[in-house]
Image (cartoon, rainbow over all chains, first blue to last red; front, side, top):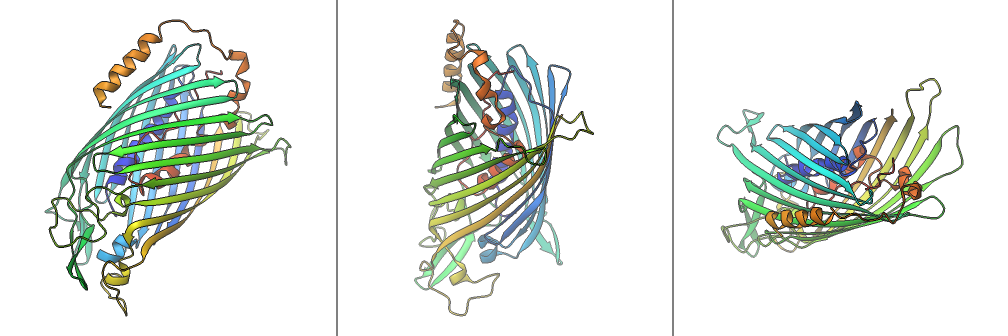
Length: 403
Length: 74
């Protein structure tokens, strides 16, 4: 495990997505099955795996969704290089949710379970959404509560196992409010607000900060984090139908939390279907650009002036000041099969994204600390290393079937 | 805004929602909005994965779901 808070946020995200189905109140989502293979390759980390998602209606008022997702991680990230050994790990996540349609309201109930060798997360969530104003407006509320167990893997006699002396916990609660609005016959608007509070063990049990021993040498010690974090995020998203059957969309999100992180996210997308049939099917192409920037947490530093400099000390690059650009393209081929009349539509999808991240105050410490305990031939003085930069290639291939 | 403030705001929205408002986009005028290309999230399985990539590398979290279209087109 490279760090912890992302797992919690993953669960948070999955819940948001599962609840998004409920945001379309008054109509149950369509029955579909998807099988995805993905590969992320960047910053010394390779993650690949499958994900399977099935949504099925039971009668006219109930819809069930199940997802099974596996991350197979092979990591020699910058954090791992400077303070540990490369590792392989696997995370399995399963989720189940139920949507119940009653008049103009949809009620959602669900659970997410994520298992990893050193991190177990269980979350329950519930939500309700309601159509109003002649179905021009949908308003939704959601609540979630998670309980996570944090462990630490160590090698004893060369065998990777949990440190018997280390067991921590963290709990998370969240509340979200969403409003979707039809503005014109070609324009949709959606806004969301979400507050999340975490309490407990919030840092990584592995990651270390570094500090000056003197101007030419440095030491390392484990991070120290506050045991609470509260965040507020608000987003607005718009989608517009163009005169020639294509769509553009734009999104902005503002984020702030009690650790001093302020984030801005912006995204632009364009969807273009080809009207002309090709081999009995049709194509949809999509392009997307996303920009993200954030300020550092109050207790983040690339290198601290001395050991035990402050009560809270972090060197997680997620908490640094940086900006990132991600650009992606996708192609979807939709088809029908006459032999399978029960299949209303199938599709093959390929998506590629390129992500580049530029850090403003996170230096590449391998120039001074070396990699996996082996010093570089000509080590640089601490604090003079070049800034770290991350580039990643992200590929997804998935098949979808609609029933 | 804290959680209590949100509840107050939500309640206010619901109460004002009791009065009837004439829809300015009639149901038969929502053909474009019902087109699958207008879905905020066309492929949830793909968006779940990609947002996980972002969430696990960024300090920000929350308010990322598609939120549905609010179309009521069917």
